[in-house]
Image (cartoon, rainbow, N blue to C red; front, side, top):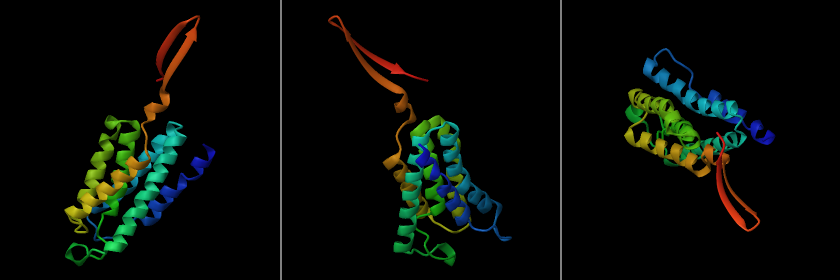
Amino acid sequence: MRNHLLLVPLPVLFLIFNVQKTQAQKSGIETAGDIGLITVPAAALTITLFKGDGEGTWQFTKGFLLNQAVTYGVKVGVNKPRPFNNGDNAFPSGHTSTSFQGASFIHKRYGFKYSIPAYAIAGFTAFSRIDAQKHDGWDLLAGAVVGIGSTLLFTTEYQQEHMELTFNTTQGNYLLGFNYKF
């Protein structure tokens, strides 16, 4: 578990250094989307730390790193121009893939009801990229698929660690049991 906690700062540092600087001409929606880019994955990582879930921290980190590698690899490989000539490398949306990776991690690891706020913020973050004229719908869809897909490859349900199937035999009697620790 100690080795997994050493990797915790990597996703946080990556997000901090990758966020665009706020400029005077940015709209409030675009700025809020930039905040969502950091908030959702930071919340996912924070949940694992508060729960003492070292395995979850490691699973989040692996999914995060894969998500970033695939997103930026495809961006460079495809080099799709942004709408309204706002630059290059539009496909897929990095904001969308990062925020949906965090939301889907919470969903897969801890359950849907805990992920509802994260999905709402991820959806708003995706919308902010269209509002800022940085992406179109295909960029957002691809970003969400990459983010969710990277979570599905590495994340297991947290509850599975608390289930146990038992078997006991004494004097010719057999007992099969199921234990669940809350």
